[in-house]
Length: 335
Image 1 (tube, helix red, strand yellow):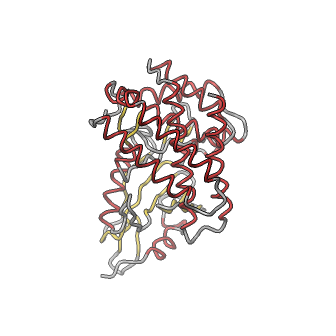
Image 2 (tube, rainbow, N blue to C red):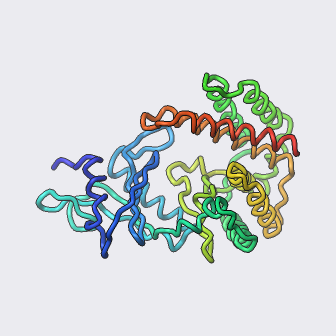
Image 3 (cartoon, rainbow, N blue to C red):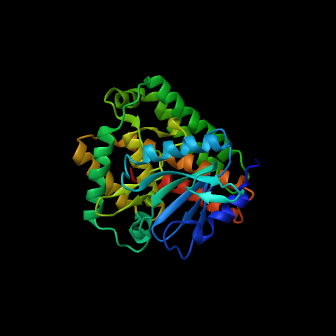
């Protein structure tokens, strides 16, 4: 039996009548990794059949395994959001069906749809974030990091990975002819490489104190929902190495993303709340390093979007890369 193609699956899942309940409308969102089909109460995520250096969704079985991993890992910070994994099947007459008996053609993650107006990025945009919201979020994150699995690796291996990430970013950012300031790129990354070389003990102590853990990996405002009990979705489930982070690194990534949205005070408040709750006091120079590190990595990812044939606005991603680099410059001047 020939399995339906991805276009056929997307067309099927775009129809309201295929979902349980009285669904009137399906809203569709695309990412580089998936399609998300939004009904009134649910979100249904279908993985795109992609394969890269970081992820393999090339077969239905690979997508099934990743769906199961996504549910398991995301329940750490969103226990009541991820309902489970649902099969997309082929009926006896060859028609596609959702969660019905038959041969599995693909798999979806079934989730509770979160209120858009309570996502942190939306609250930032309308200046509606409260200190009470952020205090509760800081408490949630502190508990998560306290219970996260520490990672067993040497300081040398950890520093080597950071070094390789920065050098790769330097090659791509300084080697492009896209309007990025090469001198700025080389200055920022050169300073971070020098800090890694001259201050190994700062990094090694984070491992020794069990602060390098299997974290979330993509702690951005658009993944945080400030409900009465905050939830965080969309961890980097597809690659464990990308989730191995110093707690301070993950929090500075969030701070960077808040600052990109012109809400640097939000990230700073969350960091202070974590420090107060946990007793963990990362040194200022380490926080500055992590912020610059993530800015360079995120600028590199922004440039990657230009390789996507579906991208219609190159200026958007070039501006995004420049924004990250300029945030680091401003942060360095203030430090």
